[in-house]
Image (tube, rainbow, N blue to C red; front, side):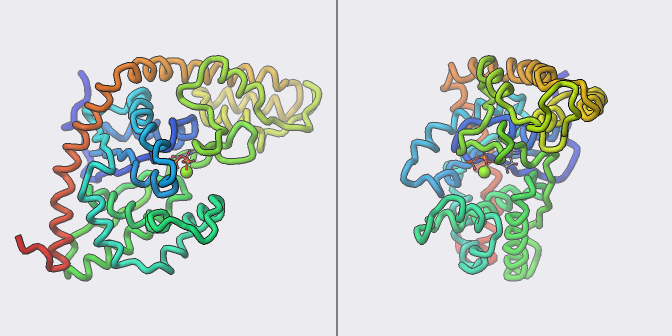
Length: 341
Ligand code: ATP
Ligand code: MG
């Protein structure tokens, strides 16, 4: 029997999402997607395709966002997120999210936004100089709008996103104190099991915008090449030499993706002792990744061949989301004494 919404037992609501700035990759798979596929059976889960947030650093290049909306939806469906269980919706098509952001922006100071450690780091790495888009500096406010609009209390995040939860709860507390009653719920993080899968060279986090990712649409050849080029232990020259497992990207990936954890521990012990070559560990990893990605790639190709169907999925989810968000917007307007009719 297939699962239905009535199987969702928890009262907690989940809100999560991705910027529509590129195709999703293996980092997303272990960092969030796999978990979402599990969570949808237990929780009321909403996934936002964050196109407006994608624009906050791509205003000059909106095509990067618009051309990736359906890519992200296809990635979701291809990994097993089920639109019958999870509301998949488009941020820009839900007016309450923008309206709430405007209301909330009156409760947050510029200096508070500038102190947000995640935003601070991103501003540095994106080289904005003095030209930080206002939308970028204020995106934590828009995330607070997204979370509260759906009454979400459980937010799956990587550890880099914890400051966003803090900012959201500050806004919630301010509003509740203005309203003099608890009109909004505070939320808590649900930390992801792998929050920073490294790129294959081990230098950075795998990321859409750095061009260092193994995509969920990667071909057999691309997977083979990526694994072949993977960073291992530069001191491990001969097969019989003892090798280092820490910082060795092949083992980081085996830990993240190989289903038999006992076998991975045996491999590590053998590698440390000497006698296990990088060719062998890479071959094991490659076949594991080929097996993982092949069905996703095939489902994805099929999904992308019917874009009308993808738009339909997004539209249905967005309609459901619009119905859900009106109530919170009314409560917030009421708190400010602005709900005359
Ligand atoms: P961009 O380069 O546009 O910032 P990205 O690849 O970093 O894209 P995001 O959309 O910013 O992807 O990430 C959304 C969420 O996906 C993160 O908060 C995190 O939970 C998860 N995620 C992204 N990259 C990784 C990674 N390398 N390892 C684990 N999780 C990841
Ligand atoms: Mg990112």
